[in-house]
Length: 125
Image (cartoon, rainbow, N blue to C red; front, side, top):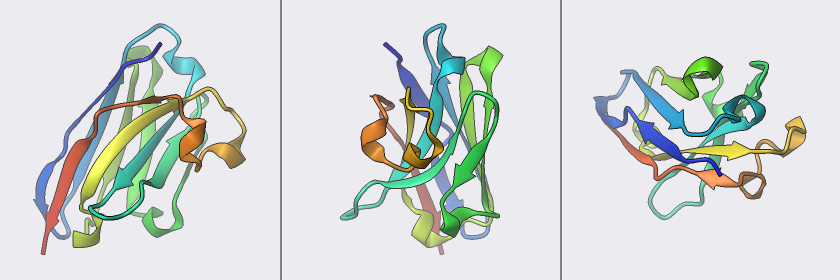
């Protein structure tokens, strides 16, 4: 069992930056693939980025160059650095953990067994 708690969301102006954090409980954090997803009002939850225990990562094409995922295994924490934020980045951002190591599966919501409660990010124009 893994519990995930996100933090760092808030209100920011377009062009600004935020860093989200996700703190995980449990001693097996380093074994999981960790992902970030987001959900805007009226839209499906979409993949943002994911990172495996070695630090290999991938991100959605629309966010490459602006969003960076990283993790600190000793601290049981995964981060999402978001730069050059746009109003369309407004959403609830969720952290998730997966046992599935195949990279091709990282974008799929149903491959993640554990989810945090989400943190709101609002970007004003």
